[in-house]
Amino acid sequence: MARYKRVLLKLSGEVLAGAESFGISAERVQSLAHEIAAVGRSGVEIGLVVGGGNFFRGVAAAAKNMDRVTGDHMGMLATVINALALQDALEKAGAPTRVMTAIQMHQVAEPYIRRRAIRHLEKGRIVIFAAGTSNPYFSTDTAATLRALEIHAEIIAKATKVDGVYDKDPMKHADAVLYREVTYLDVLAKSLAVMDASAVAMCRDNQMPILVFNLNVHGNIMRMSMGETIGTLIH
Image 1 (cartoon, one colour):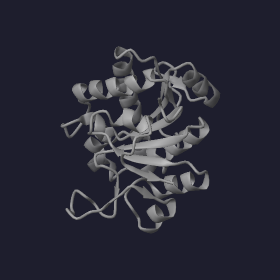
Image 2 (cartoon, one colour):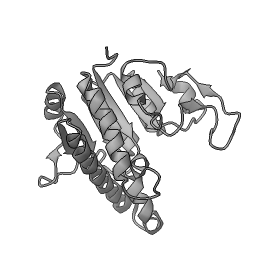
Image 3 (tube, helix red, strand yellow):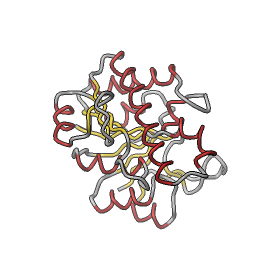
């Protein structure tokens, strides 16, 4: 039986690129969609926030010379592209899905309305929240935290490419130590690279737990929702 009734799953845009360095890998998105759809069928209500790095990386060099607000708006639009790709794959996997955007684009997706989002979740639909918060200077980590609080999710599940939170970068240091549990204050004080400090602080202020886990291990989304001991719990 599922441990959580309602979760907010945060994915980076890079996850959708798979082995590629840019864009969307159809195979990776399809695989992800089947995993997420299976969790939805188990009775867990799923909200999704996806980043846009897989597209934005391709224009990052040009964006350095741009106004920050313009660059952030481009990043928000990249998240909408990813959200639509995920929606298509999820629906092909048999999961009813809605994309809701913080920037209004009626021909593409529904505008984000909190009560409507909660109603979709109650009806068993997976809801993908796109376009961040619609405000520049806020990351998709912050958007994920905001949406999790608004829809009364029980936990934020932050999917990464490593097993959890380490005392230093495990990609660079073979002796990096994995934490099984860590406090919000430790994450902030030690500058552990998990989420933006503003997102962690918001979670701390509202007692929203964060589970950081490895998305590259097949079945981890289901294990997370069932409450198995994986990754790192920040609380």
